[in-house]
Image (cartoon, rainbow, N blue to C red):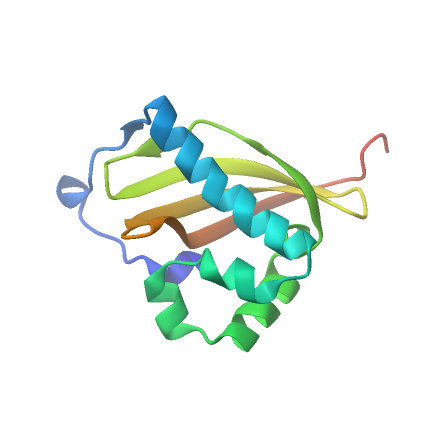
Amino acid sequence: MLAGLFGVTARAQEPEFRASKPAVRKDVIASIEGQLAAFRANDVAKAYGYAALGLRRQTPPQRFARMVRDGYPEIWTNTRAEFGLVRDDGERATTTARIFAKDGTSASYDYVLVKEENGWRVAGVLRHEVQGRAGA
């Protein structure tokens, strides 16, 4: 879930991301929602299973849990999410999600997913601004 997992490549080498077809959008969002639901259920092992293989190779489950708890508090204590446009190139997908936390705060996150043998998996997350409490 670290944004730094992806190196910067020359613009000419970047894949062309297009708006995803409905089936891809559904699968990408289902993977993110599955991971968020696992965090809501306090099931770190299940949430870890939604992480991309590359991330799991670099980050043991305990470190993964600490990283999410400390660096992505809205994800750790999420109650729901709203998703923006999903884009993909067939191998990688991106979307922005507004994640709402139990304490009433929310933040936007850019998600990067990779297509693996068992479906789309979360490879990186970049946190944006934190919003105040709803209605505050």
